[in-house]
Amino acid sequence: MPGHLYPMTILTARDRDVIGLVLAGHTNAGIARRLNIQLQTLKNALSAIYDKLGVSTRLQLAVLLLRDGMEFTRRGGL
Image (cartoon, rainbow, N blue to C red):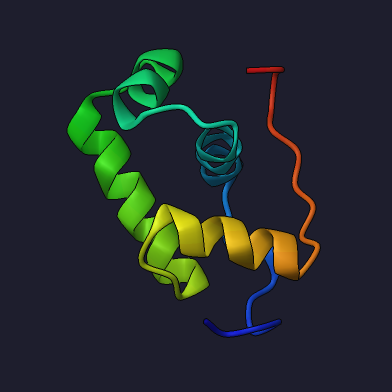
């Protein structure tokens, strides 16, 4: 996993919403329902997030964010 090779600006507000819900332990189906999107749309969004951050799993995503002390805020109190 790359460290410090990505600015948080590459993540959209929706990316941060998705990441927050992933880190909160929600399933893909639960995240899709909360964001009012199709399950496949959510899966595509997760793939894009993983590509942006150079990870391939939820666990790697969580480790990356925790290890690097990244902070992000979700919109609207989802």
